[in-house]
Image (tube, rainbow, N blue to C red):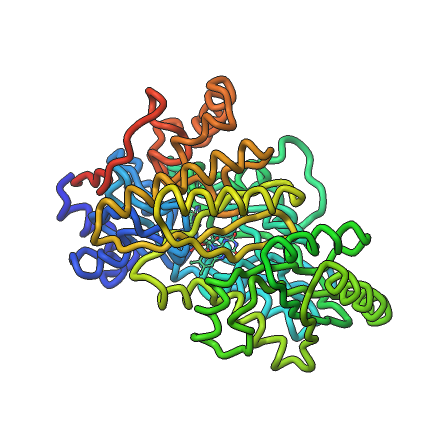
Length: 475
Ligand SMILES: Cc1cc2nc3c(=O)[nH]c(=O)nc-3n(C[C@H](O)[C@H](O)[C@H](O)COP(=O)(O)OP(=O)(O)OC[C@H]3O[C@@H](n4cnc5c(N)ncnc54)[C@H](O)[C@@H]3O)c2cc1C
């Protein structure tokens, strides 16, 4: 089939305007939030429903064309980068909340529904969808499922997998299946569990069955200011050791504090070494009792100031500054790469030392903003992509930081996935037998590896040079 004929047939399925073919528009889809590598797809298809996804995927199956699922493109590991897959299928038109059942605290949503839209729809019933990535005003639930996304409040509430009861998925053959559903427990293999975190390599998720949770009766948010990152990290362990699990426990270091203050004027002291945002939620009386202990613990570990958000506006400003911290980083350098790793909480001081060492070795400026409570680090490596040598240093520093995470008993990703970025580091964690077993599982869903090829699994031959731009393939 010629490219022209394919475009004609795809347009018959989704409508003329919903097949993107011109070069300028395709540039939007040439990377996600991991901007170090880029590859432009040949075509982007924007279906409006699961039925249209099935028809599109069946056509691609007949022609044996590889494709990449894409939500909002906020991913940070290059998951939706088209590598030897000419067609991108983007769910951004699939935005219907199909079912909302407040009494049973469940919802069924299409894959392109934006994360924050679920909580907005549930709020009038006193409910919300708990996993709240900082990208929640933009990222889709389909992307969240693929990456098993976390967020500031997943310290207490758990990550995506803890809130997804089922999925509808269209396999690369065009077969449409449902795993799990609205009920709490299902029989047989946990195929929903396999799908969550599969990074778009099993098929395209078209519907997600989610659990909703009650909005807390009371919320208290604190800003604790420290002279050093070491004092702030010791406080994190101190709070948890005191038997308190806050809803969120987030840290920003001085580099990020300055950028955020310039952007949002929150009133952070620019000379502080680190700040912690601590949020407690639950029953009002319990929150009050815990609040006193949190303040005392912060002071015991050297906080020079502990402020309580006096009202919802102050609380919203604190969260805005944290959740939009990445945006503020644009003030510091033309480009940045957000690394993502995880270590046991008690090893946070060690990994921060390793990050400092990587910054010195590779002559880079690195800021830190992260989910300190669960040991999920996000060093932000600042650079200028116009200088290829700087890009090499960023990649090398990223590799050193992830190797340090593994050495400290942690892992390659806390929440952003492996994607294209970290696939060649998978052998740091997994044996060849482990990787082969995972690959066989993937093949059960997608035997021809046409759905999001060349992701997660290391390139055969082990340590392979990173090359970019990645190979696009013509149709
Ligand atoms: C400013 C910023 C802050 C962030 N904060 C967080 C955070 O706090 N926590 C966190 O976990 N992540 C965070 N992220 C990362 C990112 O937002 C998440 O990984 C998110 O889940 C990606 O969703 P998306 O819709 O943008 O997916 P995309 O980037 O479009 O895709 C991500 C992956 O999912 C696959 N995919 C997308 N849709 C589907 C589908 N329907 N079916 C199958 N596969 C699909 C793609 O193939 C790709 O592999 C942040 C990103 C940014 C830019």
